[in-house]
Length: 277
Image (cartoon, rainbow, N blue to C red; front, side, top):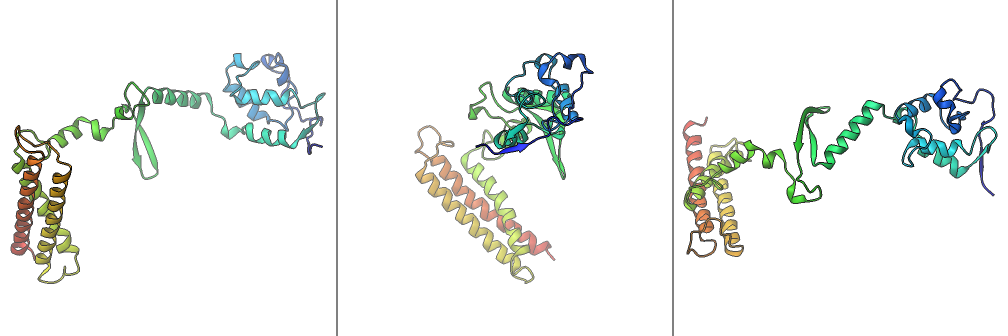
């Protein structure tokens, strides 16, 4: 036997749709819809956001279709007891007023999904309590929406990002391997000793700068050894000249990186020793 939930389908005043609207009066299942199935304000909003030509025969993926299936079975002159499964599906499938989108929101969501399928996305700026749309549209994918290698971002594909990366010593055109290594090493060695000098356990002692120098030189040495191992095993040929052995240019860059790193750390140590308080 089925477990039943009694519903007041035949009580006076329980009907939420009157024959005041001539459009509604022409649609059979919208007549005398019990309040137990759907409230009046929810039904009115549901009809408002549904095109008029879909009222009589709504698509199966809409809330109105779910309402039609229940309204045609339950109500005055129909079934007055609802099985537990139908009652469960009724509460799950039919929305309340807050869940329904108005026409403007529905158009916004539809436009958003259309842009997404074209590989575009609205550009938003994050903030402390959410994010704000700027009105700009970013083309973040190529013509094939499922091709991951066509994904584009502002950081990777923006003009400023490309110019910034192309000016780094590793990518800049016209430099020799030793020049690249020397510049990269000096830049890193210069700032490496700062955290050890200012934040290390000996920061309040006269030896703080010397300890920072030793730590910075140690890190430069570790990184240089790692780079030499990488060059000897992977053998990148990016900086090789015609006729060179594989990875000759890369290893030359790493060697000069060690020299530049030690020089940059030494220069920073001299500044701290002379001008530091």
